[in-house]
Image (cartoon, rainbow, N blue to C red):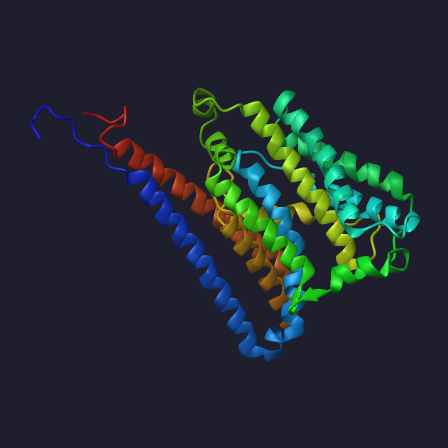
Length: 345
């Protein structure tokens, strides 16, 4: 190399960011094992077959919703309306079964997907085309969709007696000891994990959340991609509503209330940045499992219920602090890179 040759660019940032994210996910797995084994040491029944089954069933709905929320968070947006979509989908699916007891289960799942797609499209139109901030738009639809649910329910309730035995059996059944709902959610998470990690459409969500202006210059349709992201989030929430009905068998106008905060907390704790462009479904799934295990551990140890909310809040604050640290270190190494335009020669 001669003196006039420029120094080669060193890929410092991707390596650093990848190491930080992997360390965070490894830390979550370690904390998960610590809580699980510690609780089991105090109460061995915590790892009993029935307890583990109930734990995974309880986490399954949250983990499914985390998939859609992760897509939206990667775009540097948020979807607060998912809990209302779950409630409306659960009740309308139950009403459909009440009037058509012979309805095939796959059609019920498709109905939930279709309903969620329509509701997600409402959010997408507001954010992508109406340019309404996602926080404001989805907070508004959270109440609008819940209001529609109250109007439709009109003080009524769907009970297990209104549902076909086959549908209830689907919600409580298992294959080789693994609950059906857990298997379905795992398949969906693996599919979307591959989509986000390997497909061009999935990678565009990361690009959009990292730098929307650069995404436009790269030929990405920000409006279309944003619309698609909210539609996917709504569709997944609609499907989650059907599974919620299958899991619990009884729903009313309050079904799913508060789920949105648990889902966002799980995603952020699992490494999905609120600043967009960073995170994996694997980490988000571990975050959902960790919060579920902690909740079950507190119940097993007969701790007051408010401790669960306090721990969730503390983990959420810690995760956001880590996000800020990662962002600052990434910016620092970017500026230190030899080819960075802002670096002082």
